[in-house]
Image (cartoon, rainbow, N blue to C red; front, side, top):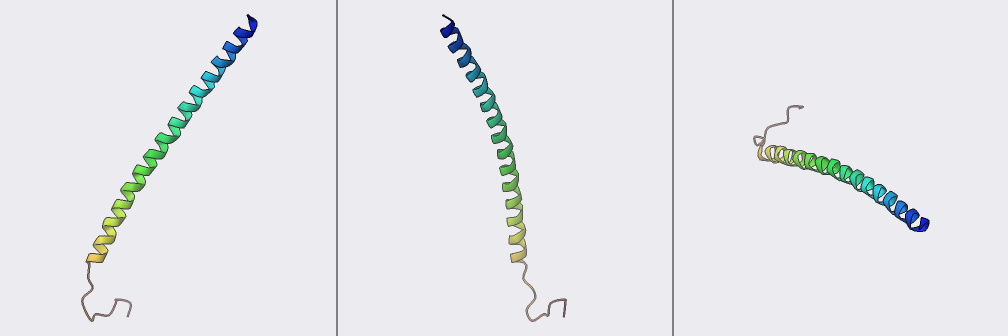
Length: 67
């Protein structure tokens, strides 16, 4: 009977460890997802800024300000 009790205790410890691991992994995934969403927003903003810059045309035959 002690063998069964020992096996049951080991299984319970494994289950507790797996629950903790799953919780930790979930926290990591949640943090990564938030970072991905922030990076996507930043990429969209930069893409819009780039389009705005591209849409601005310099007047023809005008020297740049550094000349």
